[in-house]
Length: 195
Image (cartoon, rainbow, N blue to C red):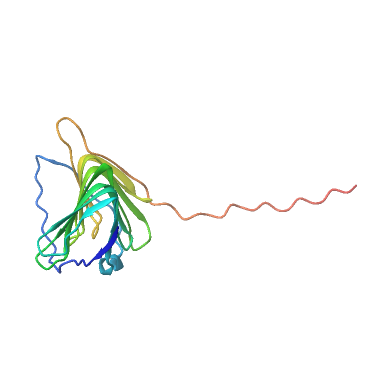
C-alpha cells in the first residue's frame, strides 16, 4: 500500500541546548555547515508496508508493519514497524520506527549521505531531529562515524550528541578533510631504441 500525507516544519527560533552532564557522552559539531536538503521539507511523505492502519485525522497515530519504507525527498526511513503521528493540523509531526535495525538516511546540500541505524529511531519531522537508541550508529559520508546507546542527530545543523548507559562509552571517528589531489609528476618520454 502506498499513501501520501502532508508534512511541514514549523518556523521556530533556534532552541537553546541544555546539557545534562550525567548522561552526555559526546557533543560534536563537525566543521563546515552541512544541512539536510532544504527541498526535502517541501516534498510529500510517502510510505509502503506489508500492512497499515492509517488515519488522516487530527491528533492520530497511523501504524505501518512489515518491510516499512518511508520517503520524503532524499529522506528515507526503514524498519519493521513505524508509527506516524499527525498533529492537530493533520501534519506529520513525528515518526517512530523500530527494527533490526531501524534506518535513516538523507543527503545534505552537498549530496553527502548521512546514515543512521538503531533498534529505535524517533524522528521529529517538524524540527528535523533524529533520536537513535540502542546500538546506535550515525555515519556521515567523508566526515566520520559515531556509536552510542543513544545518539541525537540534528539534520539542520549536523550536531550529534551521544549518551552511554552503564559502563559503556560513546565513540566517534572524525575523518580529516581530504587534501586536493596533486598531479603526479610526468617523466619525459623514453627515446625509441633503434633496431
